[in-house]
Amino acid sequence: MQNFNKEHPALVLGLTVCGLGVIRSLARENITIFAIDYRVKSNEGFYSKYAKSSVCPHPVYNPEQLIEYMEANFVKNGVKTILFPTADEFVKFISDHRVELAKHFIFNVSAKQIIDNIIDKKIQYELAQKAGINITETYYPESIEDVYKLKDTVQYPLIIKGRYSFKWREAAGGTLKGLKVNNADELMEKCREVFSTKVPIIIQKIIIGPNTNHFKFCAYVNRAGKILTEFTLRKIRQYPVEFGVGSCVESLEYEELKQTGEKFFESINYTGVGSAEFKLDLKDNKLKLIELNPRYWMQNEQAAYCGVNFSVAQYLDLSGQTVPYIEKFKIGVRWVNPVQDLKSYIEQNKNDKLFLFHWWLSLLKCQVFSVFSWKDIKPFMVSLDYGRKLLKIPGFLKKQNKKNEKT
Image (cartoon, rainbow, N blue to C red; front, top):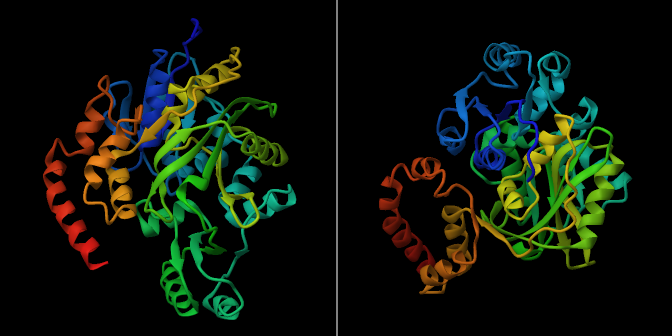
């Protein structure tokens, strides 16, 4: 990219793999980068050599302390810092406290009402239907009594998901997006468990089909509502296999996906970075919305590799500079999280005795890795606990082989 003004520092909020991707994408242009997260220093992004990282107060539970922390550490020389939220908690924080933050920081987050509507999946789905976007059959029980009333009237299998993603993650942990139930008894049992955690839920009919029927439309929309960058991808594998996050994804061109994503973003007056996930329902051959996330997605570094650097586009836009138009990007480029992808591959190829060799061959097709980078190696070393986690692989494989023999 041609030279541009880089006087504004960047502050990445959230240091999971998602935040690490943003850091590395900004580092391609030698932008000054700071990064924060409220979680302990177990997130890989903390260890990137490209950013000065630190632990901050919780954005939802201690927002006033976080504002004070940011003002004390990232307000200098009268030059405003540009914010890059990479987790729902930080998006909500910026949305709720935009007036105070705008005094010293620059950001592009949709209006508070829009963000609140997106974070609440019930309202998000209602807005999607109003815009003519297809969704699967969805229910919104607020008590176990509501579940009892619908248990014998719905078609199984179903999935139980959190109405608010970040609350679901806090309760469930890990990468599990939902709980599958195959009958009325399972539905009642699982709902009782979830209701005991006081996490609001939604229940949806499962869209049957392979992981490769999952697609994602990603865009950056300026404050005037114009889409400046776009990117599309599909899942090759995910973990957990049924309801997880992409462990191996591939860039592709898909005009219907692009048009559907643009339609949804425009219908709700969305601005900022966002990604909308859809699944193709083979029963009616329609793309159906899974969810829209109002932030960067986990595989955002893949887009930069393909020629669509969302982080730099956002930086240019918010610093008042021209964002180059990218008409085409590389297709067939694969991003992989090797640890999660190996688990996914094993689960899907239980009877393949050469699964490790075949998975390794599939790994050779991948160009972008979730954490590994020769130029920024420490996050990868930390993710492996400096090699100690590798010692657990033989035991894991032995355990998995015994599991496969039983099934």
